[in-house]
Image (cartoon, rainbow over all chains, first blue to last red; front, side, top):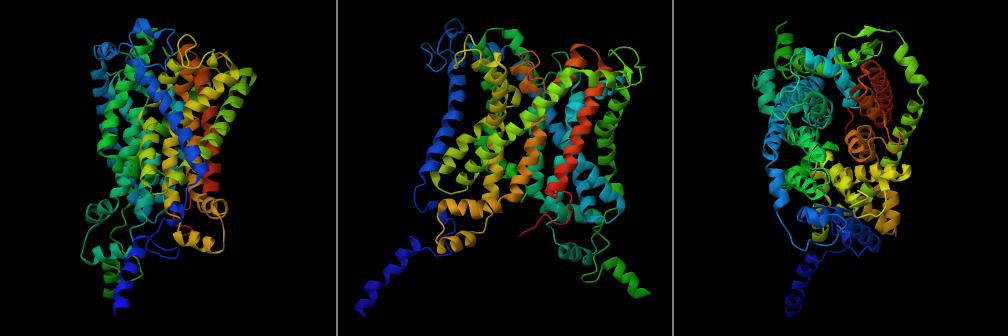
Length: 301
Length: 298
């Protein structure tokens, strides 16, 4: 009896430190013992990532007259926020607002168009739905660069030149192929039985979209939101070609213009780069899980 | 009669249902929008390639003159070579690093989660911002690397590869991490019982299991590296000379620097043909086109 009570705690102890065949602990093979090669590799990559970021921040805090000829890796002797001041007084806030407007509009257009499109591609069994899907599939590889000349002509004829719409419309169009791939990928996982069940309840095709397809595709939809917002955030060529004045200038183009505006004032240039990263870094801190999970979704299953 | 009506409206088990099968009209807005802003411009680019147009006034037809000029242009061969080389080298660099980092990050230790969060930071900057950052850091009068890196052909080329990798490796690492986490644990347990070591497991289980992930990631990388336009524009402006003038840059220069939009359209059409061919090939290789088999191998 006493023998038994003495032994009883032991299984509990082993369950916190599982054995090789314990199925409850899933990632065991990665935790078994340190992997020196992986350790060295990850530290190496950490250096590659950190040094440019460190240099960027450090130089952006350096006074302009001290920056030239100075080693960028040395911390500034008299840190200053003047460079940030310069950037903020040169339209930065306005450019950022434009970028946010473009991103929001692109996300809305892409969702409004691609959700019904993907619903058709996955559910309809007609020749045209298949043909449509293949059209968008091919679109994945069409570089936006290839169409800027004719788009420039079209946008001029539509009187959209130098407006935010001139950026929004083509950016949304070129975000559609990948978005469709992501959405159809998620929608295919909704089982036939669920449609049948809703059908027995007398649901219409439209009601199924809002009560079955969209709720079940939340993961794909958030991936598409992130993907298309990033397209707008990164967009450079369309703003470069289709806008000219300060009014509709977005952040990427604003940064590019700082090169000629600030000339050799590299600390101010780098301050603008740092500032441009802050909004999305804030999003990353708050919603890292959603952002990372959404981007993983771009890779599919 | 009545039973067939019931089957059509309510659906029988295993027969498929009629509701929940939207008509193709639902796709019409998307198709129209995409046609206007992506497909029609492509057709228009093809048309413009047979005209002379300086951006003002109306395009004048000139027959095959632009195409003649394109295929006689020594810059085309050079540009094509650079574009292909850039794509291949970037693909190799990004795949090796992302694969290793991704598999490493798939482990759930706390330090890995922390480092992964740090590794992701470059992806938060726009490609314009990243190009500007390295433009500043590589400046010969200023930068952290001494000497004129961007002034030599190989230096400029490698700088573009590195900057592209610095930006996109975080994203592809994430894709590989997601893929590695889906590999069934039993495979490793079985291998461990058979006495396979860590590296053997990596080559015999992890790599083959990541095949589909690798295809997806590679498609995105290859298509993506055709669009390193702003990196080239900001870092090298196609230089030294025209040594890093990739196809999109060649087009930009012809159109928006020399105002020869006919010739620029010929380059653009060439780019569309090349990209479409590449896309068809990749779709075929990757099985993206198989509409109903995304769960292959599960």
